[in-house]
Length: 393
Image 1 (tube, helix red, strand yellow):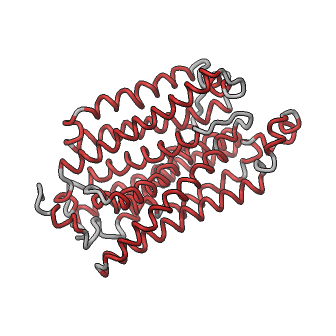
Image 2: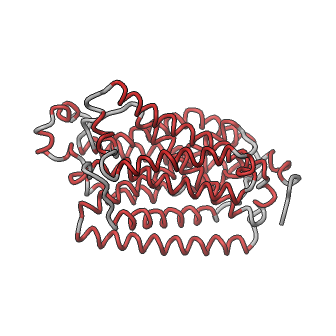
């Protein structure tokens, strides 16, 4: 059940390359921090939350598959669990951003607060000590829930006692609510407060759905490569990939619906405090980025995923997942960077180094954690059926 040596050798090769890329990217970021610390914090912020979003999304999808007891859930469970076990290191990686709070956030800049009446009213919530305390609380919630799910899942493997799986399902109901609430407030604190006069009740939902999209893209890519080896090969049937493709399509549509709803309400009602947020993201080159998101983050994957054949072939579905993951990076960049460059499009070489560095480390961590457990859960009822359908070596 642990797979063959060829599989682990392949995992190690990718892990080593990802780690080297991550170390190189973070080294370049460290050099950039010495010469331009403000730009370092800006680039590091959006790149960090891109990959942190994937880690959070893994937890959300993990609880979702426990709740709906799907036929495809056991196929991706180990990748999802490995993604949640990266959270302790992601907590360490958020620490450099703490030094950048005065550079990034207007609520930590006394001169900005003095001339903003709206921000003065928000200071009981938007202040550095409370901000840091909330961040610690978010990570605690994410880690406790992820730890319990991973612990019980492993015990289910060893004992075969169905009560452990039942515990996972029982926790997943309230857990997904608490987990998502923490992610909601984290998006408000770390990203929406970059422009504190602006607010939107829909904005956190865009982040929540985007995190699930990032996680699904990562999971599909990983599963496609694992499916070339035993034991995943026998379980990775076209039907299960088709189901994953349908789930990916669902969240692509949901992301577009929520983003469009926010735009229509804000623009249609002509809300004076909210419209500048969009004006900042449609000036100069930012308008082209917004158009690219509409075309390539929604319309392209939407029409491709409507075709059944695109979801039955794991290679095609993985290619779509790579494309969506890239567009998730563009989306995070577009959400964050115009807060610092409202006059027009701007990109810095640190905007390339930061996502490469953090992403390389995160992928290496995920693969390292993936090797620690059997690639398919034991004592899973769906496994008996899996070995009898389209097994291949």
